[in-house]
Image 1 (cartoon, rainbow, N blue to C red):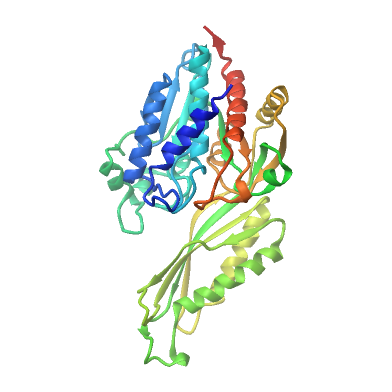
Image 2: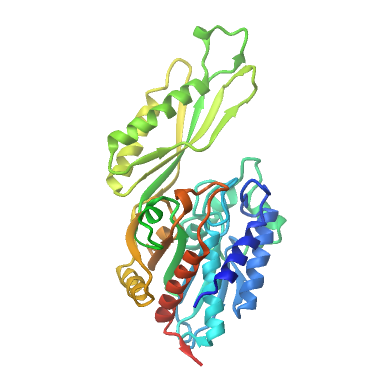
Length: 410
């Protein structure tokens, strides 16, 4: 059975690699905090008998070779980056459960027929370089070398420069042949209230909602805050505010669980006594059905275009689009059978958040397990999940990985 104390220790130690001690976990990709967490993960992978490697994106792989030569791997894991001032469990919980699966294989002396790989992915959140799911998208060839070379953070630091600064090599191959992956298993915190409200420790994910991310630029004209009459202003921030304020009603009218969020807003020149001449903001659109995502994107585009004129110029850049994805039915069935065998209560649900599994699902069989989030909170310092639920999830993923790898005791 999974070692709950060991899982708690991993979560605690990984949470210390943060740029904001006492104010949540801030672990941006290719930062010194990334490097600290990276070294810890690699140390534990090695301790659990895995052969460790990194690709040209900085994704970390710990591999337990199988007895079948050149066979595809069963991959277990998640991401280890965070949002600014986030929690200790988003992503990290899935990496820790992957480590626990490896530890159980080692302790029980199981040798897999198909290789087992534990993975720790970079930049799932998109907090530093935008777009999100960079580690998995890059692995699957959805991010070209040219696109990667042009990625920069808000300070203009290129992703390649940031990689080199912490000793990573961006020249290593980034793309992985999908034929080398037999399945991908991911545990994640729910980031919502359903499991806690139902008092159920495990959620088996049937589908992940579709999402698109836009970057909107509103261009106006700067002016002095005291000397420019109100009727003569071309205020980019006022125009942006009017657009953003209309999003909730637009989402409600679309219905079917559609949500629209602006989480990033950059105002230029950002002076208290200067009329803003430019605003750049994010738009995150999600829905369980593809037609609602497309329709919401169209309506958002129409809304933004309708605010042009009188000196205001608008533009939209599409950063990311991923269609709703269904999880593999066979893996879902295995999760349920294992949960029944272990007497662990579960229910099925959809994920309202995007995950790396939605990228991999186009290339291999994928399964996701959720555990409850206290008060439904995530992406904040208060994010917390019970270690006993993590252990239950680890037991389910271990037993499932054991079946998929056809592991046998030596």
